[in-house]
Length: 580
Image 1: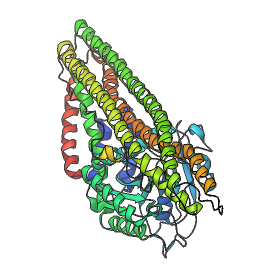
Image 2: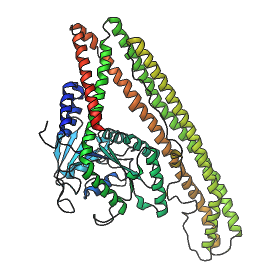
Image 3: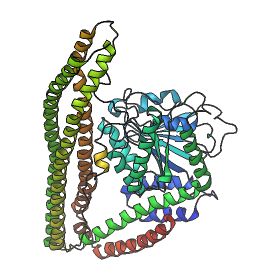
Image 4: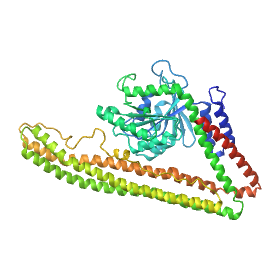
C-alpha cells in the first residue's frame, strides 16, 4: 500500500485484510480496488442510451475534441479520460494528451499514440470489438480546470443496436463512483432511461442528470420536456435539483456557448472541489463493502456444502446442483419467450399499421375532395384549405389507433411480466424447498421484481415526439399561377406518402418502446435470476466435502471458514459505516 498521506488509511487496511481473506478467483478485482485506494480518484461514468451525446459532453468538459463523435452510435469500448492530479494554469489545457493505455481482453496492455483512439473504440473501425479491447485509458498531459484527479468514463450506449456495446456499457456501470446520466430532449426521456436512473441511484454516491440537445426544440417544447424529465427523476428517487438541461454541442468558441451546459459544468466542477475527495473515499468503501458481502455469502454456502460429510449427503448436494441446472435451463426458455412475445406483438402492430394507412388514405382523399369542391382562390389557398381538411379528418383516427395499440401492447407485455414473475417465483420456491430438503441449507431466495414501466411514464413514451408535425404539414407549397386543378391534384397525389410517413412514425415509436420493455425483462432474467442460479451451481459443483474428508482436514477447513466469516462480518460493519 502507498504511504501517500492523502490515501484513506482505513481503506488501505481494509484492502489488506480482504486480500488475506479472498480466494484467488477475486484477486484481479481486489487488486484493481487496491490500486484505486493507493491513488484515490473519483470515477465518474457518463452513461445513457445510444446517441444521447455522451462523447460530445465529455469533449466539452475537458475542453478539447478527443473522443470520436458522429451521426451513428460510435463508442464501442469504454474510454476513460484520466485527468492528472493538478489543474492546468489558464483557461484551457496546455496540449494534447500524452498517450493511450490499452487493456486487452487477453490480459495484454499496450501504449499507443492518441491518434489510434478511433481505431480502438469505434464500431466502424473496430466492429464487434474484433481487436479484443477491454478498456482504453486516455491520459491527459494536464488536467482541465477543476477536473484534477478525476476519471471521466465515456461508455457505449445502453440499448445500442450492437448488443456487445450494450454489454460493455453495463459492465462499466458496475465500476462507477459518481455518474452523469445523459438524456435526450428529442425524443424525450424513455422507459429505458428511467430504468437507468433507478439503477444508478443506489449505486452512485452522486448522480448528475443532463438533458442534452435541447437546442433542437422550440422554447415551449423545451419547458415541457424539462418538466417531464424532472418528474421522472423524482419518481426514480433523484432530487430534481440534480437535473440540468441544454446542449453539449459547441456553438463557436469553447468558452462561449449554451448557457444550460455552462451551468451544468460549473455545478459539476463545484461538486468536485467541495465533495470529490470525500465521495471518492465513500465510493471506494461501497465497492469494498459489496465485495466483502459477496465473500461472506460464498463462505456460508461453502460451509453448508462442507457439512455434507457422507456419501449420501454428497449425493444430495449433487442432486441439488442438478436441479439448479434444470432451473437455469427453464430460465433460458423464459428469455426466449420474451423474444417470441416481442415478435408476435410486433407482427400484429405492423399488420394494424398497414390497415390503418389504407383506411386513412381513403378518409384523407374524401376530405380533400370535399374541401376542393367548395374551395375558391389561389392554388396556395386551395392547398391550405385542403391540408386543414386532411389534418382534421385523419388526426382522430391516428390518435385513436395509437391509444388502441398502446392498450394492446401493454396488455401483452403485462401478461408476459406476470408469466415471468410467476415462473420465477415457482422456481425460487422449488429451490428453497430442495435446498432445505437435500442439504439442510436455508437459502436467501427472495424473488426479484420483474416489472415493466408503469403509467404514466410508460404511456408518455408512446406519445408523439416533441416537435411532431401534424399530417399535411410536410406537403410542399408549389406556386403554379392559375392552376387550381393542379393544386388539388398535388394534394391528392401526395396523400399516400404523407399518411404512410405519419403512421410509420407512430409505428416506429411503438416498436421501439416494445423492444425496450422486452429487452429489460429478458435482461433482468439473465443478470439477476440466472446469474444467481449459475453461481450457486458452481459452488455445488466443487466436491469440497469429499476433498477435505480424504485429506482428513474437514474440521480444520470448517474452523477456518468460520473464522473467515467472522472477520468478514467485522469488515462489512466497518465498511458500511464508511460508505454512509
